[in-house]
Image (tube, rainbow, N blue to C red; front, side):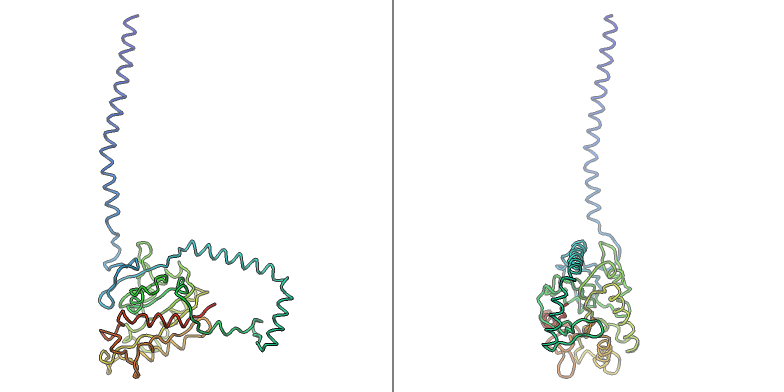
Length: 332
């Protein structure tokens, strides 16, 4: 009997000792693995995704070099797409509620029509709505107007971003980009992946879209080719942003000494293309802005006081551009 007890006690002791040794060994291995796992995690965070050989600009605080290097750029506004969707849902609900209560407002509507007739306001026979000219008239706005705005363009648009004068707006721009490749080139950074403006437009929603493009490939094609390319841009923006107000901005001219008067790189050629783009504005949903006139002298050349290289505006004079935009806005 004593022998049996001794055997059982020895067996239990062996099991307990083995369990303790295994537990201690497991804890030791975990302590050794923790630094290695942490180092792997830190290494993944430290190594950038090598998607392109060119520098990608992600934030408004990074300084860019206009006209000296090719840089991709995407600067999104503060409001997220989820917030925009929530805002849109609330607006739709309000609109549905207003529509449900419309029958009770018939008396007020009739009275309004009578008042409009008395005051001389005309009724649009095409859609039955009062003709509101203010919807197509430029008005003065605050910087908040640009919270849902997108700027598309080349190095001149890069300059607007650099100025930090409209920080709430978004920017799809690249130094050196031309009208022939602006939609297809992968110049937009979508969370570390480069995509085209055409694709990016289908993923986001904007209330206003400002476009300035064409000077970098002024030597390519003729005015008809330029018009076709610009029309393609407008069609793409309209398809992806059906409710946006579209602004065509006249290309800023070159200084007199920068031009090739016997070739294609001159303000006469640029002016013809600006006028061709002006003709694409319908003054209902697409509007033309004379940005080129802000910086031009009496002969249509870029004033020497506004530029240091004959092609780009000095940073001190971008406020003139922004001030023009603030006083030439369509409010819907």
